[in-house]
Image 1: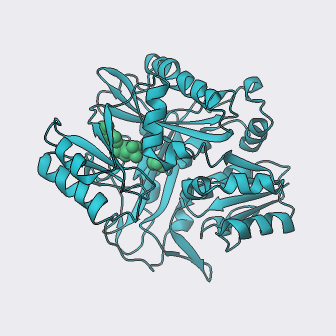
Image 2: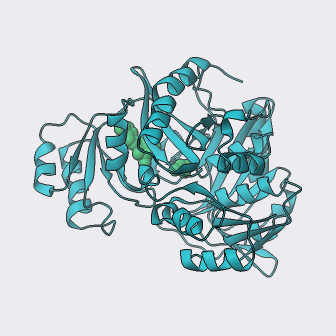
Length: 422
Ligand code: AMP
Ligand code: GLY
């Protein structure tokens, strides 16, 4: 088999690494890939990002399966285009991808299908949104409707911050159209969990739970990032919480997917908040998480390609996923200044001493050297019988890596008050 992976981050590197285990795969093209996929077993990078050009490439190279990493091409309709051209692809249709592409669509879907989510109001008119701020209790959460590269959610502590956020989105239009419509929603207090899952439109199979660390500084301080590290399983996801999630969120979502007749074969990622009032759904993503994928796929015992092919054949009801009885800890190293302003172009050293798996997010291969090219640069992922063992291994390894301005959080997986500890 020849597989094409669309995307260029650490998530795509982890997907490429995981599927390279499958012996029926001869070749994996990564479009455009990165310095990590360039070196991965069976992989070759191809410098294409445009959907029409990807279709041409997939036809020319007789690609057997395409896996889409990021949300943007899904929302743009890459799956519909590939299917029109009789090409096998794993991902939701353009319509289904609106569950991530439009926060308003997602919230209305949750409401329609009785899924527990924060109270919200939708605004297209800036003046009405500003008026609403006088009635809110604070903090309040303001969200751009469209895709905003993970930056479209603003938590406002008071009315003044709310006014500033609304003006940035609706007046200054900082997200180029994506924030002209907004959702203002109730702030929920609790702990978050990421539940990646796979669906064939008839069944949803949840993966092992995981916990992202979104803020840049230790102790969950500083601005939100794409994710600074992940542990899996998520120690707050007790059996009781997972049962609540399955009953109130997963089942109701599947019902909605069927009722809306969505063509949804792909990943569905539930961002949940575990609160004192129960489990709430914060958001859907229609793709794997980054860096959740880097921690979750190494724990997957089952073959990921077979799983995807079963989804495409609408056969997930007959699949039983197997997981390693281990804990994973993924620590992400970023460039100094990320997520605001950072420099790139530095040589990464010490990688030869890394003993566990390393996934590249933002680095290019130049004459056998990896050179930083992004805010998030790479992650080290280690498995252990306990979370503590996994943490120690990951931190031992990341300490061996160096590039100018390297920064990583020191407290990934260091949580207090977990309901159960593995
Ligand atoms: P989202 O893209 O909706 O997941 O939002 C990004 C992040 O903002 C989430 O992971 C949460 O940390 C935070 N967030 C979103 N909605 C809420 C909410 N209603 N209450 C508290 N935090 C939220
Ligand atoms: N790590 C969060 C996300 O992928 O959306």
